[in-house]
Length: 112
Image 1 (cartoon, rainbow, N blue to C red):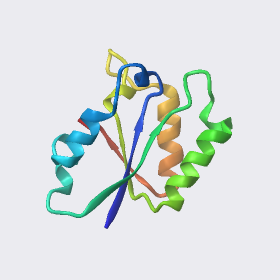
Image 2 (tube, one colour):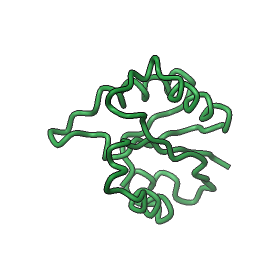
Image 3 (tube, rainbow, N blue to C red):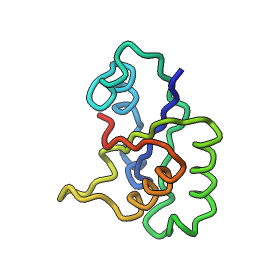
Image 4 (tube, rainbow, N blue to C red):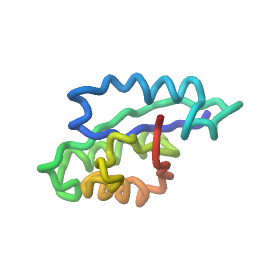
């Protein structure tokens, strides 16, 4: 069974329940359409550690990335909440994405 994770913005926690990401996954819509007909399990739903944290020096982020590897996550979908209104992505999220990719985990832009 394929194991996936999701990465979202800590600030989005103020208004987000994660329901839209999970619904899109279970209904195999949007970026999750690629899993139609496959057995896939969401094993991680992680958030960044905030704007004031440098991911490369944040023990918590380092631990989260290591945990993804330990849980045998193959792919991480990066939530739409990680993009600013102008369409650019948060620098911290970009660093975390790079850290995840260096673990051999595929990154997919988008959830719902």
